[in-house]
Length: 257
Image 1 (cartoon, helix red, strand yellow):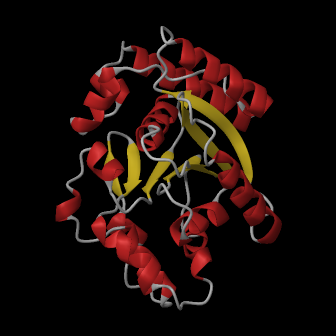
Image 2 (tube, rainbow, N blue to C red):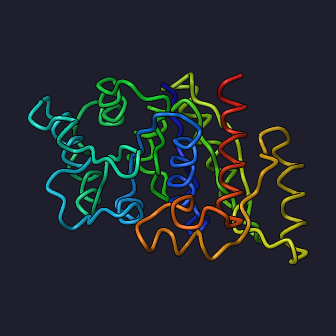
């Protein structure tokens, strides 16, 4: 089982959309996937068609339960299956976890301990919050590889160096298996010269870490999430579906060599 975090502390880069569609793309390629919404905003939970306001148990309840050494909340009580992908959902309660678990020893390792209870999956995909806080540290300590979505804009590299430093820090002190698995460009419009220039800069900066596939700007991708669906179910012939499927195939080429 390989654990992948989708992470960029800069908002608006299609992080959540990418986590969702990568998960469903891998499922279409025959993989069993567990998708974790680790962002307190809960946009991924809504994006797959789950009413986050009606949830009685979320990843928050699971983390709090395990943090205090309990086993009152079962993994099966939280997982929801949606169109072939198992989801560990969240909602606004997750925003309390950093404060509530502040004094708990080993609070950075709770997700890693939870994932020891998980069996039967090829991939676990984590949609991380857009910040470098305890939730993100939990994700990175439990993760094998980080995939970074980057919007093709002037400030594309802003913050990524800090993110890379954080990954290096976690790698050296807490998770020697952690590496940056790849970087991919999102919301690309080939007609805009700046976008082409930024992709060139990213390829020069990241070298082989940069995916050849990039995700073009496509309104169907946004529409799919707003309808509680993924791009493959919502618009299977769209550029968005083609791009995310191409990205998933590249991921498998990297992960299963």
